[in-house]
Image 1: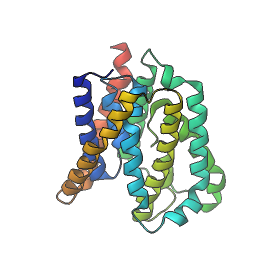
Image 2: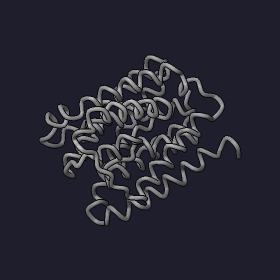
Image 3: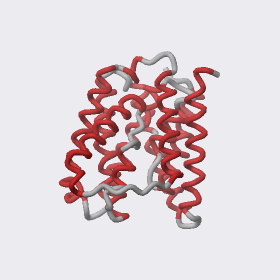
Image 4: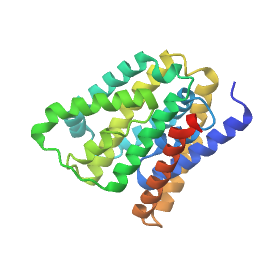
Length: 249
């Protein structure tokens, strides 16, 4: 049973994570899972985030005219992330961890993503490489998601390298996150992690996550998003370092 303090902390974290997503366009699962991992087991943290992540990603995926074309282009990536997620959840790494290994893995992924974001690497993936590279990137992303709940690496850098236009990239990331979130949500439910209290809190988290996105979009119109993104990435690295080192502190 989740105590009142944990519930209030979770709702506050989802409000903050939604605000970050509203400003920079991503980061809700990464921020919320990282912070929730400080107050609850990693598997519960991932399960709690899944409903708001799934709903907000559907919103992002449908908000544009490119959904059909993107689905046709990205289907090998989408199919392979589902396969990787199912395979990873089958190992039980996330759902049976009791020694802090999953938390450390979440921290490592946050650090990697933060460093890649700050490095501003701009690799390019030509059309002739997509056929074999998409399933590899999707499978690896699915495995990492099944271990940590964070699906950004290496999928987001890969999609950024495809040369999509800005609105196509945002919609494509939303589509990818929708599919990966659905796979995680179903897998965690089947594993018994999505118990009634966690499911109810995950559903209730839609309210602060949605409010946070609205706040973030309001902030986005009044600040330089790139400056905020830099602060976000530095904070992500710091949070990741704490999670990575916590088992040994």
